[in-house]
Length: 562
Image (cartoon, rainbow, N blue to C red; front, top):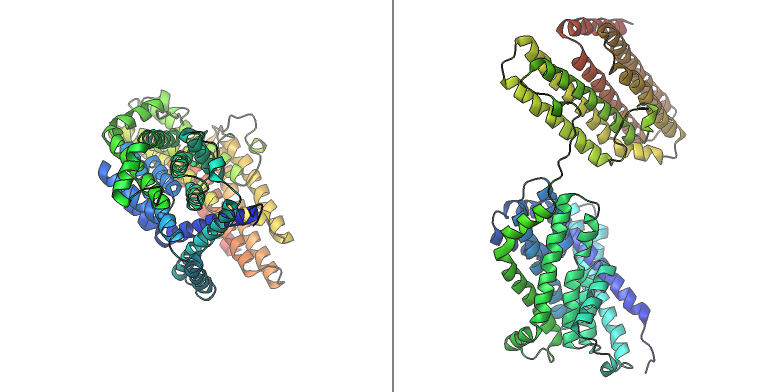
């Protein structure tokens, strides 16, 4: 008779179980990720439909966290109301109880080895021989994940069974259901998986290491512990994230209180449905898990609307001021409005310069020294700021254009809008090749790393010239410098293409390196050209624009003749 149980077998079982859950979740998301997102987006127009949608998708995905993240994205995009989002979260709590049923029914009623090994074998061979097909690869991954889930459960069962040979359940202190609920909460918070906690609880219950009431309390705790993922994600996050996290936590706490308070009543209900829970303990806990979540939803549903209002009141939308000039200008006073919109375009161009520098990991102070900038913003938030700023400019301009303006003023406003669009295109061109610059940083090719450094040097040189033009009032000086910048840009582009051709002829570059370098150079040139033209449109009048365009055409003709 063994004196101790094999802790490594238990940990290995837990690891394999979690890995199986991970494979299953990823496979299902890859197989039908878009379909689920579309289903959630289109099937949440009412409270009941929201709850049903949340339950259905969570039952299939086997991840309430994944559903919560989808909800977060849809609420943030403004395509799902807060009360419907709460409905989906309520439904996801019902859907997540399916895990307990799968483990309870398949994990303890069949020969796991005979069930899991064929799944792993077929799935593994499918991954090797059918890996080129994305669909079959994901189907194979789903089978392997399902097999690993039960194999891990089997290891946990074996290790806990060994423990029962030397462990007397009667010696386990009766701390009360609240303490065991806290144990379940801590286990789930630590492992970041309520499914893993439930699997451990059901395994211990099946081996009679713990009793039914202890297991039921730990499942309640696991239900609350699953909210820690969303809560951690909401810390320091947006107001929407905080609302979703608080709604999830509040509902799960209410369900936990109901579950613990009604435990004697629910035991009586379980006895009516499947018989004594002490004799059929594993199925009893699975049923209990479903019952207290369903009751929690029924109690909560009538108050969804009120709760949504309270959440919005607790975490109101922060009014972000992205403009520097338009908030103080009146669109009905044309001279002041035009000056305001031109200053705001200059602000947008400075923000674009800053964003592009940050994307290439260049110290912003090298170009915009002494100016206030958005260093604290992440790249994603900074890009969002650019879009919001453009939207504010367009909204202000639309109000201006709806009032009485002469032809010259209308043309001037339209040019400013054109400048705003080109500034955003400049940022997007750099944003789209950000990952390529990251790859260049890690490249082992000396030519690639040298070229990467040259991109940064060229950007700094150009932006130093352009930022100096933003405060320039002499239009002739601006036109001359912009024309020179465009010519220099064309020469740099031609020089770069020649250098790539030379390296290619020497066999110094791989095909993918050539492709990526040319792609990045094209994006770099487009971004730079768009920023130059944005300053041109913002600054020059119609007559000056005609002269500038004529000079540019003559320069291009001369270049082609050479």
